[in-house]
Length: 244
Image (cartoon, rainbow, N blue to C red):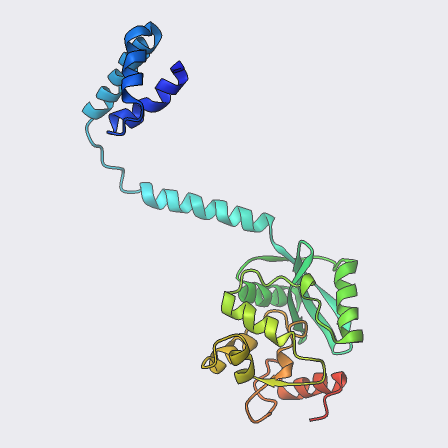
């Protein structure tokens, strides 16, 4: 048995776990170096056991939490989503992205950049910063309005809950120009009694249009409950070829 192997087993031996115990003792009896090291380590362990228990200062935990918060804020500030504006057949769109995926799409309503930024941050629950949209973002928008197809590989909803992701992914499977009910989505994702919850997911959809919540209607087929108004919902569906 090598000296390094013996050293690795000492803590386990002291804790009552004694793998190869006779071999360790046999090694210690004939190895002067390990005997000296054992005495040194046991002496240190004894000194630690003799130290009094010290209560932490009352402000230690708040200081630790503040430090963690500052580190988290620093990380977020250096990894913020970018956002910008792009023209579309529906008017100006507010779009946020990070890495190579779009994280937010909304229809602008005349907001200035600061108001738009705050709106997107509230929805994403993380900071965003103004930037010029890269070409791949413009291409994704143009592709959607020319094909009405959803390129889910270019969309980031990784921070949503599994239920939210499942509902939005199912909405993305509704063909352009067609509609499905909240109940249909709930049943398709294995949650047949969760139609109301599906409605909430559609209302909070951070990537409107690309995850087409405008194709989701109530059980009667009525075009209600759309964040940008029923008229806009009807307009989008008409552009897609909906005949209802």
